[in-house]
Image (cartoon, rainbow, N blue to C red):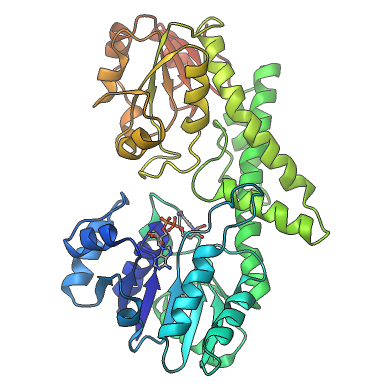
Length: 437
Ligand code: NAD
């Protein structure tokens, strides 16, 4: 089989590469010529563990190639996947579908023979039908079906998530399209992955419902963490105590500075908009969005409080800038709200991240960036842990203490134990557990 993958970002590049690993011939297309040049030269434009080796082996096997020319990619393709960005539209928070609809028009102009057009991007209910309308309008003679196949991979573990997903969701309404999709996912079918066939609308909504549910779960435990701090409980004990209940589940019950990243913030807001427009508001999700926004400010206040009530004239060392570990993705990272708030309160912010600094420098040019964790600490008034990269989990606490001006640590990911920090002589603040003065 042969497919075209439009968009070589976090989703398109991983999905395209994994499909080629399944034995399918994949041509990945992107408008960004610099990205395609890098890929053709054997470089990977994003940081995703294991992706470089998988791309290299599939390119070598002749199953995976890259181009900026959609017409070339579409030649002989039984399916074309749209994996372009759907960011928040400026002003109103609806998903910006201009890239998706742009791709639909280009597909219509280049398709020949029966083609399944698949939206892999996260798109609001109704988008698939609009894609079909655009294609029909542009090419009344086109022979095609539109499918929805939302992607559930997580950055940082994207390859494993794609190759061994909990389920595959496919909105496909014709037998012909279902058969093409079944063939594409044959390898997963063989390992008994549940494949959920639905209508276009249900499939589109499943993706948003899943992401907003997870965002709600995170927000719930974050609020429980705040309550724990007030009443002297430990949120980790509470998480374990509730998570062992099979109806609740253990995952996504880890408190932190609020959810961020390329999906949850924009998808929660977009679903709120869809629901409002449909006359069926999702008041829980509206509240989740509001709580999560306010949490970023609360985290800046927490850091300021740990520094004795003011950071004016102080230097704050920050470890971790990306929205989570094992990615270079800075989109809607908590750091983007918290660090400017510290700067506005008069602090100098010194920062280090293993993979996110190139992007962070574009978004926050006025931070003082350092090349490693310990270089960030020298003479700083406090250390803040913002992203739980593995290399920050086992810092030499003696060295940290000797480098800092004062032994103050604010751990917004709870990667250290309060008792251990007390023994090491730190004033230690964390989330939802008793602080060490
Ligand atoms: P991204 O911004 O990393 O990549 C999108 C790519 O599409 C860019 O390289 C861009 O140049 C390219 N592009 C845009 N229009 C094009 C066109 N007409 N022709 C060719 N290329 C074009 O985005 P992403 O993070 O991969 O997300 C893509 C979609 O997948 C979004 O809808 C997102 O919500 C969804 N999603 C993302 C994740 C994730 O973890 N990043 C997970 C699941 C779903």
